[in-house]
Length: 81
Image (cartoon, rainbow, N blue to C red; front, side, top):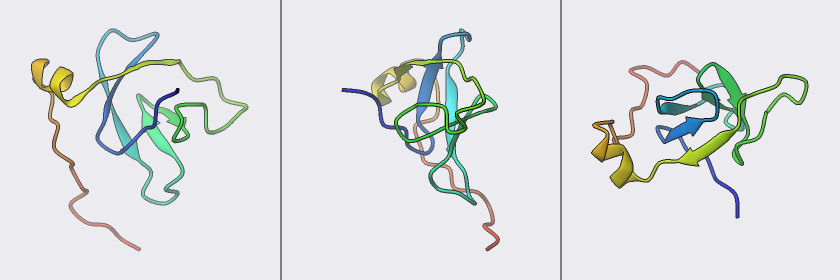
């Protein structure tokens, strides 16, 4: 079974040592941004032509808290439609 990304989750990318926070795209809800890269909900490259680092681990809430990371959902201050 693979991973399922969600807004404000924390993940580990293969090429980075520090956890990266997941942000759902506000225009296209099928896109998740992690460390400057675009992924689909299953953690695969959203744009097939653009290589992205592998997501090797989705941190649990307990793991994120133990690292001192925010586990609160953080909505943008203002959403313009």
